[in-house]
Length: 198
Image (tube, one colour):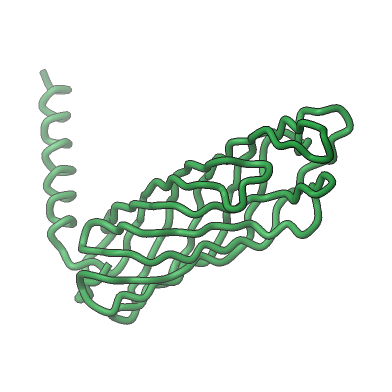
């Protein structure tokens, strides 16, 4: 009985804290989101799907800075190069990036980008064919986006790309770790302040 009482009291305190935080104007937040996209160009990959986690601080009204990471899974596709069918492998991208956002108004249009390094993970080879070269380990990461925001949500068109140079090329097939797609993120407030643009 004591345990049930403590549990109810604990849940009540947590719920009150969450509701209070959700109603506050926030300067610091965690942004949790998901994205889906089409590979651009479609050489070794066809599509991508992922999740994003970021911390954002609004030190100046309408301007957010933070750090971002996550995981995006790229689906390999068959591609014919010089008469040989390549069975390209799936791989993942884990970015470690700086987050920059500009919110001209408290609700409405916004734009920004993530800049950093994208680690490529998964099978060591580009394709499952014998003699396939090793995939790149990563490269400069860029994810510009433009979209709509309110206090709780962000909806965006995004382009994400890991620049790998010539590493992982097979004949005329370049190694692509880039996609164009849609993203959505939910803002989880960490504290209150006077700024309301998320």
